[in-house]
Image 1: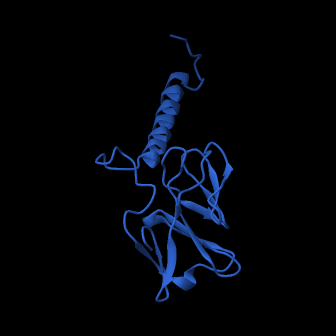
Image 2: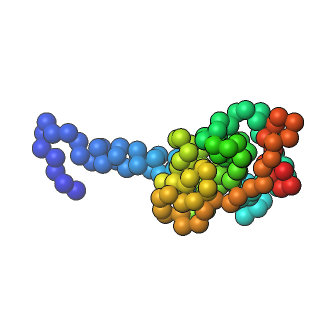
Image 3: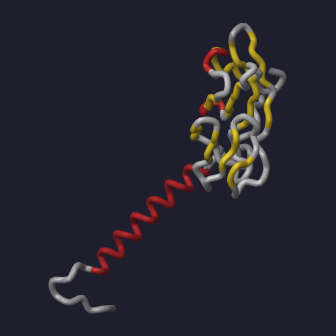
Length: 148
C-alpha cells in the first residue's frame, strides 16, 4: 500500500469513490439497454404485434416527425402529406430509441442515428435501417402496425 503524505487528499478514498461512481453509471447504461421481461428472450419486438392508435393525424406536421415512445414508433410526414412509420427499436442492439431531434433519431445505448423520414442509418454502429411499419390515417387518427 502506498503511503500518503500528511495533509494530502486520501488517494485510496478517492479511488474507491471514483470506482463507485463509474459502477453506478455503468449500471444505469445497462438498465437503459434492458428491453424486456425475459419471456421473449429479453427483446422488445421490432414491430408492434397489433395495430396501434397513435393519436390525432394533425400531431405530425408536414416535413416533420413525431416519436411515440410508449409504442416504440416514429411517424413522419412528407411535404405532400404522405405518412411513413418505423419501429424505434435500434437495429444494432435492440434498445428503444427515445430521442428525436428534428427528423434525426438517436439511440441512447451506443449513439446510432437514424433518419425518421426513411429509417436509414445516419451514424454507426447500427448498419441496418429501422423496420418500416404499415401506417394509415383513419377517421383523423394515425394507426401504425400490422394491417394499419
